[in-house]
Image (cartoon, rainbow, N blue to C red; front, side, top):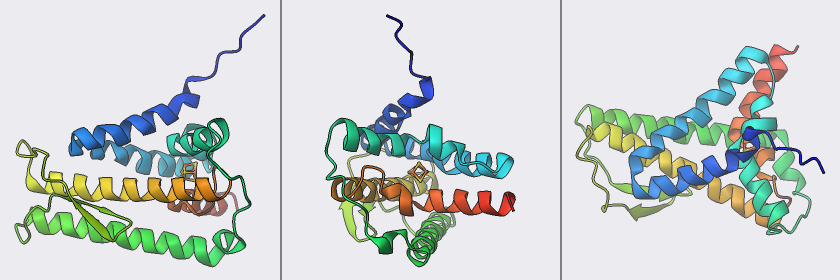
Length: 191
Ligand code: SF4
C-alpha cells in the first residue's frame, strides 16, 4: 500500500510548540516569534493571498491538533459577536495598541529611562516575576523586548486555547489579529 507522505509544512505545529517551550528556558528565544509576525504580512503583501493561514501557521495547526486530533474541543459554534466586524477590528486595534505600548516600553529601556522589568504579563493583566533568567549577555532593551513579545505570544496562545476548548478547534482564527490583518491586505490587493 502506498503511504502518502505529509508535506513538511504540516508539521509547523511542532515548531510553534517548541517556540513556547524554549521561551521558558531562555526568554531571548522570544525574538524568533517575529518570524510569525513578518512572514504572513510579507506573503499577503507580495501575493495577496492567505497562504500563511491556510498552510504554514503553526499556531493554527496546533489548535487543530489539540481540538480535532486530541479531541479537547467541545466543537461548538463560535458566538456571533466574535465573528462580527466590530469585534474583530476592535480586537485588532486593541492588540496593536498593546504591541505599540510594548515597543514604547522597550524604547524607554533603550534610552535608560526605565529599568529592565523581568516579568511576563499574561492577558495584559497578570504579571509573573521571571527573575530566574540570565539576560546579562545582551543589552537590557533586547531582553525587555523579549519579555514583552513573549507575553504577547503566550497571551494569544492562551486565548487560542480557551476558544479551542469552548468552541471549534480553530475558533481563535476568527478573531486572530494577524488573520484580520492579512485578510484586510488581501481584500485591498484583490479589489
Ligand atoms: S488566523 Fe492567525 S492563528 Fe489562524 S492560521 Fe491565520 S495567523 Fe494562524
